[in-house]
Length: 326
Image 1 (tube, rainbow, N blue to C red):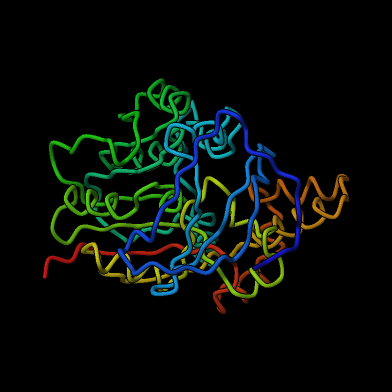
Image 2 (cartoon, rainbow, N blue to C red):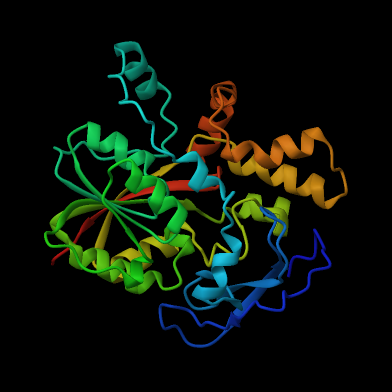
């Protein structure tokens, strides 16, 4: 068990926790990897990271119940703020910008080349991605559990349902493409979620997910300070192998895996490490906040990020999967 980055954490009085077993139905038996708390908003609570001995899937247990989890998504939650809709239409990209994006692909929102159709985004936050895809000709819809983020999206004229994926009603027509950017790890029941998405997608339809993945090097270096951990909002902790097994079980065939060409996880982890060591300065704050910034410094770090991504060591990935009906 990792013992670095110790903290004196206490459970808030109103926090209701639940113990959970492996969602794949494996025999009981886990390894305790570490105990940690919320490093993003510094909210109280202490949570365990367990790894199933049978399949290797990591999970947070005990964890807040769905009702209690809302406390860990405050109004200043980064994705809800960074995905606000641009009030003005996006100008068509110039040719050199299009070429630059192809040459310097970060792989964060990489999509298959598909003709526009019906698109669903789960965890769409304030709707920025939906707006961009709507301008490209897609008929878009979203699901988001934050009332404030849903309000922002609806004010921009977007069709967004306010609930969790597990509680959302089925669509009137199937979707051609479903996307979820850094969402699967937040679901209380990813198995049921993937089943629902399979039923809501047309035969041969696409599922595109981005999510953190546990890299041994990052975990060894940072332990409870690893940025991708994000306890307790990250309820499941995947590797490419465990994600592939889960998708296959629920009717999805993995087509491609892209590792993100960004150093966000690495630099954020370094910031957490410095903060845990008591170095609360400007550099520490900058490093901890780096993953939420859309900064040109990503270009400066691109050569190193490209090399680490080629080795699968950036800590984040995007996966393309197709609905399998065999």
